[in-house]
Length: 222
Ligand code: HEM
Image (cartoon, rainbow, N blue to C red):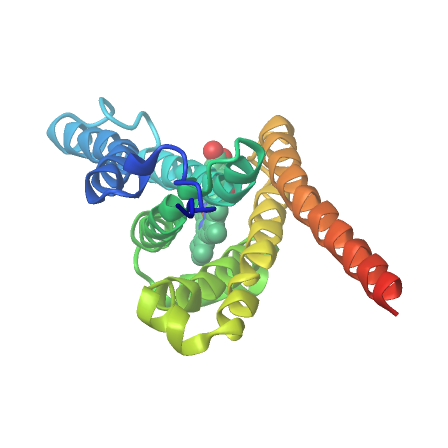
């Protein structure tokens, strides 16, 4: 009898709907803690977010935005290193949560720091370089979030991969956004900068290796 050459992937439960829900709910936890702090702040000023609640809210949401971005990029690397391809099934959930935290971070800024004043917001866009880089990252995330569905992936074919490479530009902009801030600590910038650099270097090495292999194969068949 002919045996099937295909081996079933490791940890098949990773591809289940339940696993996707569990991951999604887990990634919502930081937001629940932040919302709880906001409610506490409304009940008793100073109790949930400290002496500068607006600033604290924007910073907490910004921290989770960059962490989610790191997780999203780490998923593919981890799936390759651990040889668990099904991990990639959760990349979209991580990416959409990264987008959610970035949007809330922006809304937090617009409401609490800029007081929903369009002149202040536009003034910041033109005067503060770190805001410009934040905005570039946010704007680039919008087409990625919209086209993250299976339907769009099918429709765009190879261009989908090309479009989603924009995540690397987003990562670079996020680090520059952090680096240009006077208040952000150098340790924080170095931490996220190193994590994102390592994840990008891993991809670069893989890309070069594939290119060399393809060249070697082509020269061996000629
Ligand atoms: C991918 C997009 C973005 C990421 C990953 C991100 C991430 C961060 C992080 C990690 C911080 C520092 C938090 C801390 O000090 O603990 C921060 C601060 C901040 N971000 Fe963003 N951000 C993004 C986009 C934006 C956008 C679009 C805006 C507004 C237009 C914005 C406005 C701010 C402001 C006002 C601060 C506080 C700066 C200060 O402390 O003086 N960010 N962001």
